[in-house]
Amino acid sequence: MRLRSVIIWSLAVAAIIFLYLAIYPSFSQDAELLNEMMANFPPELLAAFGMTGIDMASVLGFYGLIFLFVQICLAVQAANYGFGLVSMEERELTADFLLSKPVSRQQILTSKLLAVLICLTITNAVTWISTFAALALFSQGRPYEARHLVLLLLSIVIFQLVFLTVGVVVSLLVRRVRSVTPYAMALAFGAYLLGAFSDMLGDVKLELITPFKHFDASYILQNGAYDLPRVMISVVAIVASVMGSYWLYTRRDIPSVT
Image 1 (cartoon, rainbow, N blue to C red):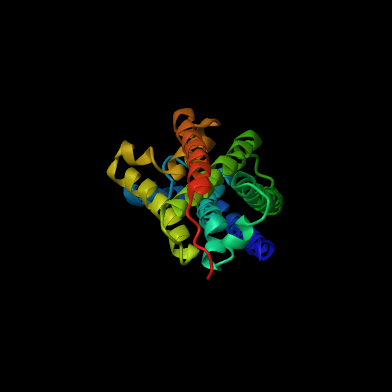
Image 2 (image 1 turned 90 degrees about the vertical axis):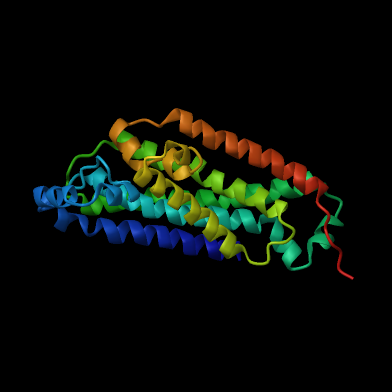
C-alpha cells in the first residue's frame, strides 16, 4: 500500500515539474513582456506565490514558481505519512496485536519512521531527477546557477521532515485519527496559507511558524544560501516532535479488541 502511495506521489511531482517547465520556452521568447506583466500584478499576489524579486524570464526564476507547487505536494505527502504512521493500526484495530509481539514500542516507532523515510527519499530522488531532466529538455541552453538549484533541492529533506514529525506527534495527541487525509491537508495548506498571509500582511511572526517561509524558493535562489535562523526553527521543531512522539507513544493507551 505504501509503495503504491510513493509511486503516485512521485509521478505527481514529476508531472508538475515536466508540465510546467514545458511551458517555459514559450514564455522565455517574450522575456521583457513577461517581466512587464509581472510588474503590473498586485504585490500581494506576487508575495502569496513567492514571486517577489524573481526574474520569471530566467530558468531558475521560472522554476522557483514551480517549486512552490512541488513543496505543497511534498508537504501533503509527508503529513499524510506522519498522521498515518501510528493511527493506521489503531484505526484498523490491529494495534494490540502489533504490541503483543516481543518488540519494544521504541523499536516499533523507529522501524516505522525508517520505513517512511525510505518512501520520502524515493520521492525526493524522483524530484531531483525530474528537475534536471526537465531543465535539460526545456531550458533552451540558457545558463543557470546550479549551486543555487542544488541548495533549493536539498531543502526538501528538512522541509518534509517537519511535516512528517509534526504529523506523528499530533496524531498521538488526539484520541483517534479516523481519516488521515483531512489532517494532512489541513496541516500542509494551513502552513502554506500562513506563509502567504505573512507576505501579504507583512507579519514576520507568521513566517516563523511555517516551513514554506523557512525554505522560501525566492530567498534561496536570489541569495544562494539558506535563511539559517529560520532553518534552525524547523530543525528544533523536528527534534522536539520526534522526542515528543517517542514519549507519547510509549505511554499511549492502546484499546484492545474484544
